[in-house]
Length: 365
Ligand SMILES: Nc1nc2c(ncn2[C@@H]2O[C@H](COP(=O)(O)OP(=O)(O)O)[C@@H](O)[C@H]2O)c(=O)[nH]1
Ligand SMILES: [Mg+2]
Ligand SMILES: [Zn+2]
Image (cartoon, rainbow, N blue to C red; front, side, top):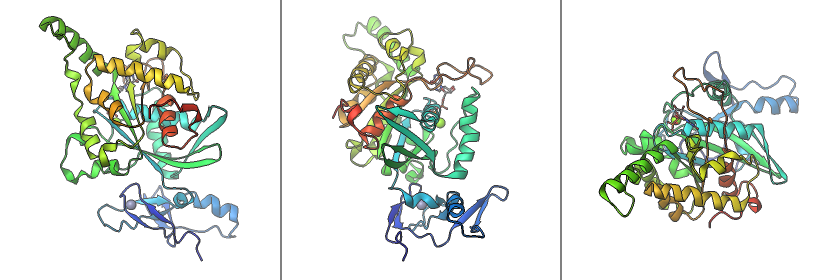
């Protein structure tokens, strides 16, 4: 009797739900670029089998037959269904750089309060590709490749472990343009339906621009209330509309990225000067959210301030993925200096129940 036979899982790629069946284990050949029947270690040594299994796959049966062939790691069934973190933001807002900086920090491990937080890649070959394409490029201080949409496939799949709790998390990062394109049967953005947490990304330069415009407009037109170009963010609005029930029940964070551009602007400067690493103080979460909210409000970034009011659990943060702008040669001149990238991620993981809530209990409920 296979004890896993009754396990029903939801595939994070096609979102179909089905009974787990690993009678046809597959292995991937990098040279041939395809999957073939797994070859068991000759002697059946359990350690060797376990090691080999960490690189085996099962083809998703995709009962609805609506997706091209895709595969799940054989170890998928060892864990609960993953927490799907959806990245939402306008094109070029810095989503890819931010999520790569977050994954890099997660893999490096950190301490949250008194517990260790560690993560490891769940999909072996996918991680090899991810490391080469993103992590190594980032480490070398080079600009990351633009997101090429692969039918809403996940960017990275990690098992996060903290204080005896193990939970897989999947980051989905699609090209922001896809939110505005409602057509195409929504395949690129259907991961929103499976989202368990949302990471909204807005970029500081955009907000600053609207801020400046709104102040000029105020002066020119003698308006009593701010009015600027930042009023709407159609990418955010479109995504929220596609979340079941408008996503209100989901934990959400707003990451105001590229905040290195705000380093001379109070109160952002104060937050940016100290990166708490893995430590997240509940009082700080509230105070920082208040400061980001105030800035967004002054810039009339209404789509974003609305998130804070509408989502039951939401915190807002100043972050920088790179620490500075990229040069014309696509290099970050003094290397990359991610700042505060773990703060929104830890807040999100705590609100989603992946890590203990104790350290972040101040998040708005
Ligand atoms: N100054 C600054 N620039 C950034 C930061 N993160 C990303 N960028 C730049 O923003 C551009 C778009 O980044 P990308 O991550 O590809 O955006 P995406 O389209 O939302 O995934 C690139 O030119 C990056 O160099 C940051 O933290 N600070
Ligand atoms: Mg991208
Ligand atoms: Zn599937």
